[in-house]
Image 1: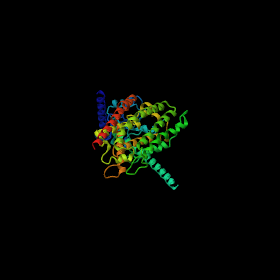
Image 2: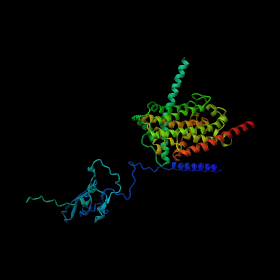
Image 3: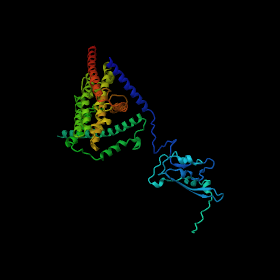
Image 4: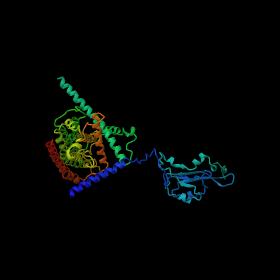
Length: 162
Length: 329
């Protein structure tokens, strides 16, 4: 009797299993066809980028050099000049060598004006040469022509040899 | 003289037609299996090559044909080369007796499907030769398992078809299908013996075709690829072709014996046979992507402790019922 019962239960379990796969057969595939479709990423540490200020669409960098001092892999560099109008420091150039960056987020933590962030959606950064990894953070702002990039600056006086 | 000449040409053309059909059929079945597996696992399956990925298997076939033919060192060359043909060729014999319609059959043999089962067993010799000659322990293990399995499952396979033979009173496939013009043997055999017979036939034919969940001869997780581990390129393609054709053939025989072959309303007979066959093939694939592989001892237990007793019981019951039905008539 045990033999027949085990057979019957086995048959039922097989049918149950087939029912489950049948149910899944009629469900919609969940595949994301990656190069064509991309999912928005949350809490993803992408490359370093400037945050965009809400009021004028500009960056918030005050060229204080705090990020450059704290960076353990020394992957950042900036060039600042004096404003012709009020003598404040104006950011001229901000570059990150992404090949060196270890994504430690120290620069983001230390920034007094919250000017830096991780670029979340940029999760498939692949380049053919290292040169493309040298990222110019000011480039999008220059292309847009935001106010801070258009401030006239004091040009350095030509050095006089002693 | 001319009669012999025309007969020879006819046989030649039949051969070409059958080989063309099984090649295209295999390409389609592989595509179908991948699509089905994809949908069961909530994936879309092949997509990019051709419409709905239909040409994906064609691309795979071209890749296989252009691959290097690796010849393992210290393999027995003659046996190694002959094994793929030994596996592939006997399955072709089944197309001799597949009736597509009234009179639409290559040879209406009076021993019918018995011949196919007899010839299809040459396949296992081929599998063993393949495993032994490739000088590889995985291949040898896989082929030994295959032979043990196929010898065991041959018995219930034959026993389950005997109910149909008792009811139809013949082994010829055309006459068996003709006897089903009032209803499929699956349902018309007395007291549900048709259903039981069909289930036994289905399980054993899964095992005969080395198909999951009875695919221990080529258990990927244990034996790499079983008996065809050492084969590459077109030789591997022949094994693959043989495997899928075996599935198609056993499904076609199942639909001939139990599901009424070409009988069906509205559309012509051959389409009905193909439709029923593909329906069974679909269930075979559905089973493959549902169940895990059986262990070796479970496999043997299932054949000897379940299928064979039930096969004998089924045969006896069918015989008794048919005897009393004839008495009452």
